[in-house]
Image 1 (tube, rainbow, N blue to C red):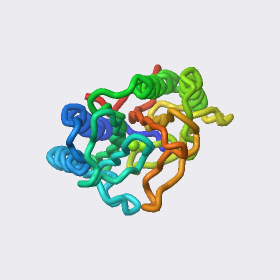
Image 2: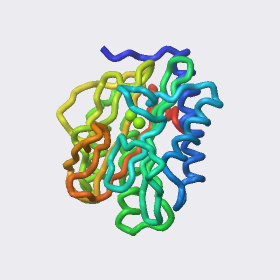
Image 3: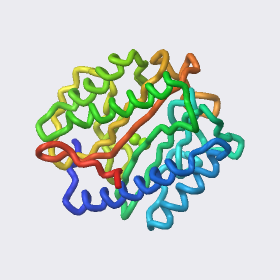
Image 4: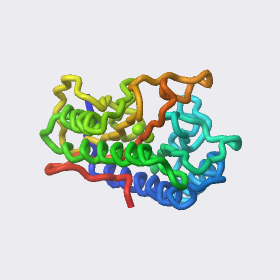
Amino acid sequence: MIHRKSREEIKLMKEAGHIVALVHQEMKKVIKPGITTFELDKIAHDIIKDNKAFPTFLGYNGFPATICASVNEQVVHGFPSKDVVLREGDIISVDVGATYKGLVGDSAWTYAVGDIKPEIQTLLEATEKALFAGLSKVKNGALLEDASGAIEDVAKEYNLGIVRQYGGHGVGRNMHEEPFIYNYRTGNNLVLKSGMALAIEPMLNLGVDDVYVLDDDWTVVTKDKKCSAHFEHTVIVTDDGMEITTKL
Ligand code: MG
Ligand code: MG
């Protein structure tokens, strides 16, 4: 059973999403060679607290930080660290959630650190394009499968790997609710309804699909050590499309 959000819940989800967007606005400004992912985490934490919200990820299944900071071949769930200093040519995926009055916003973005290789720039652009291709299929009465398929089609167009083990999800009072959202076609016949809240989040790789989890039990990395990108928005399904909560 997928919970359709009330008007009041949607209002609060937009507040939560706005705070998440403020974090990303700041990340875009401060991500430069020389900054540590620990510093990024502190900045994100302060913005969320200053806006009377709670960092959703902190303590979630024991996760130790406000953001997931995943550099280069790291796909998702990287730990922020004083030891991780960003260098020219790196990419970093920042995933962040904020809970405001019990409702969650969840959004990820991959940022270039200084100048990056053209093929990596293309990875970023294609993954962002895949996100918006997926979002363009979301509306009342549409199949969730069409959003998954649109993401898959962009990945194929750019010959990118698709992370299979992780994907998007319903979101609301909990960060992870039904349904799970694959980033490729699976034959799912779920019909979207107005008021559903979804986090759509393609994770695409320069190389193979395959990923594995490091010994810290969290950090997901690509098997071939090639770069991975991750773009995510939280949206509310509407009668004629969707509304993004995690933007300014
Ligand atoms: Mg996220
Ligand atoms: Mg998510």
